[in-house]
Image (tube, helix red, strand yellow):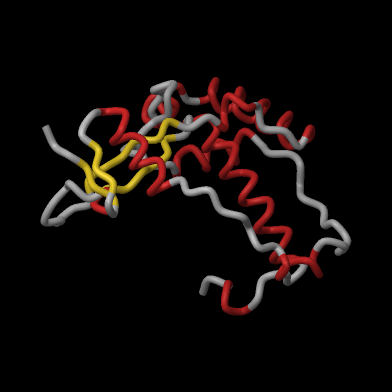
Length: 167
């Protein structure tokens, strides 16, 4: 049975290994928000709060079929195979989410798995592993639309510094 080490701590049983991985990848930290204090009182900007069936179809087509699904185990290739009915359903769900400015909690729930980093000499160190969060594919489609809306709004108002602009 593989032991897992993080500094001086050693995990032999499953629970001890989970505790080491959790401490390594999900430390408790306090965020320093002092650098954004000047941003708090800025006037809000408007984000387009509707989508179309066509935009959903294009967004879904751009999603990788090899992307791992979340805990609902619905892969993108399945959603793509459903065609027009799922485009209409996702457009409706996305429009409601945009209008209400609300994403249902079940779509935010992620399944986190830990993968080996390739080429490590030993996998007994917690740093030889990396966590990935697997989100539901339906939520990923909605999030892609929201990201597009936010990107459009911040670009229209020139809110990104030049160092953040993709060429």
